[in-house]
Image (tube, rainbow over all chains, first blue to last red):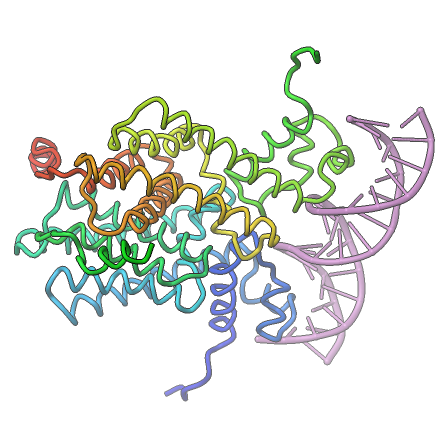
Length: 209
Length: 209
DNA sequence: GTCTATAGGTGGATAGAC
DNA sequence: GTCTATCCACCTATAGAC
């Protein structure tokens, strides 16, 4: 049996590259940046990932697998749809709390400048998210826990888009609360009983001015 | 009186640079790209915009002014809140139809790599949007044309985030309908009478599979 | 205002020793 | 697997002629 070790070099490279893309974008980081953070030369990086395109592709694939694992973990830990949706939104929020964008949201912005292999992998990531969400939404509607305004697939797409957008905006304001407020509003939309969300909050908002 | 002329060189430079950023991002274009498209040398570009940072700042400012003008035009052309919101969403949709992202949405993704002056200008753009939307939303609620689930300011932020996100995702799928569907769903959320959006559509969706 | 020419730096990537 | 050394393309920016 191989003894447990600190992360292998390729993993450390991917970790650093992921963080760099999530904060600076694919066109905003270089092998020199990774080299400095990992502590090996640029030439050594090319031994593990011959081209930037292959590094990027590995990154998206690993990210998608991690996301899938998180979704499976969510699905087994809870069963009611609203809780699952909150858990899903938390996946995004936890990135912002680590000062990062969603890797794929960031790459989506740079979409046109990416190698085709990465563009494909990106879509697969979003498709995967959409499928999982559509399943949760459909189940929630059947159980009466959710109330959809249209096809589950469309609602799922809207959810992904709104969460990515909220992440984008909150990130550029460096304000996690912006994301939390937006996520709450987005999910609120799907709950069957919708009175004014929090009467107190609105009264307070008026009193403040 | 100066005679009418085709756009002055600085304007042509800004036009090209805007399109480049909207498709490739701030870190994804260069003076060489502008040079090729405008037909003057890189050195001449530096005469009009000494640094890339100043070019970027001019761009965000001009974009904001154009957006403000579009919002003023909207405000005078219609008065009922739902129509104003549809008009607002159309401003985003029209960009996608020209194959572009929102300039400021794109820049928001690259936020951390931007010169501070551009970061500030970006926020001012989003603040401006939020203010205009909050006004429309509050007026719509008073008139009974809209039904908000929280403070108008929060709803406005959610709207901006959701539209930017929908633009981002639809762009990376190169599918305008994705944006249209998402925008419709987002606005639908604010209408007071919300039955299932389109009963026919949902029945069709089931029949298709 | 636009050009040629170039500086000085960084980009991704490779050769070959260890 | 990591290194030194290097390539060449491209980057932003400047100098100075016209």
